[in-house]
Every structure is written in structure tokens, then in C-alpha cells.
Amino acid sequence: MAEFVKKIGYVSLTGGYGSFWRGNKMEEGVYYGRLLHFTPLITFRNWKYRNYISFRYTKGLNQLDGYYVNINRENGLRGFISEGVVGTKKFVINMESNFYPPLNLLGFKMAFVLFADFAWIGQNRNFLTRSNYYSGFGLGLRFRNEHLVFSMVQIMVGYYPDAIKLNKTPLQFYERSRFFYNFLDFNYSRPGQEPYI
Image (tube, rainbow, N blue to C red):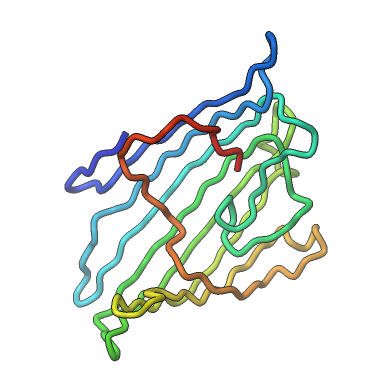
């Protein structure tokens, strides 16, 4: 479901459930939900800005051994990578603010990006605990030119306070070539397995 409300912005709600059945037993099941909101473009003097917020929940049901969800990059904390942080369920909150200055340099439009990501990942019933919590905060620059093959490049720096307990450097520099938030087209597709990510 999705709706654009003039003063509130765009709101969408997505959910899904899927499973394989073997005899009377359900295997490799998953259910997930996502709530996404972004504001209309807001003008402040010559600048414009927009805010995004997303809530995601994923839970695996009777998954095979070795199949887990993670919170790497687009799956949770942008810019974060750790092979050891996995679980059978997760809850993720992503927030982002984009600020657009009145600049156009040689066809390139620029935006300043601020983000904050929060994730809980685990396997037990009470997984919303401090030991299962990870976060990331960052900022960056986005350059966009619709006339080029690669129309967008983002240069980002992220700080991950919980990386220390994983023996990783908390400060990470990275680049992206697409938006973090994706918007689903409303169309019909053939039935298939629900993603377990």
C-alpha cells in the first residue's frame, strides 16, 4: 500500500510471507514488513531539503542451518560490513536527510547527505537488547548528472560505534552509485520465493 499526502509526504507499507512445505512441516519460511516515509521537498531560502525514515522487520521461520539475515550495507547499516553479525531476525531503522544547495556546476547537481541507522539482529525471542544492537552515523556528498551513463555518485563517511567490539575500525569511507531507498513499482509478477535478507 502507498499514498502521497500533500503536507505529510509519501508513505508506503510493504509486507510478505512465504514458505516451503514438506509433508506437514513448514521450512525456509520468512515474513517481513517495511514502513517507508519521505517528506515533500521543503524550501528554506534558496536551499531545499527532504527527510526519509524507514522501519524494516524480517524473521526467518525454520530456516536451514547456515541461512541467516545480516545488516550489511543495504540490508541494514549502510557502509557497514561484518560476516559475523548474523541472525534469524532483525529490526532496522534508517533515517536520512538530504540538503540541496542552489548550485549547478557543469551540469552536476549536488546534495549533502546525513544519515543515522539503527539495527537489532539476533536469534532469540528477546532480541531487542543492547547486545544485539548496532548503529551507524554518517554524512556525504552526492553528485548527479542525468546526461552521464553513471548518473549519480555519492562519497560517504560513516562512523560505527559498535565496530570496536568486532575488532573493526569504526570510521569507514565508501562510495555509492545509487540511492539507499528503493521504491517498488505497483505491478503484478509471477509467484516466487520471498527474499530472506
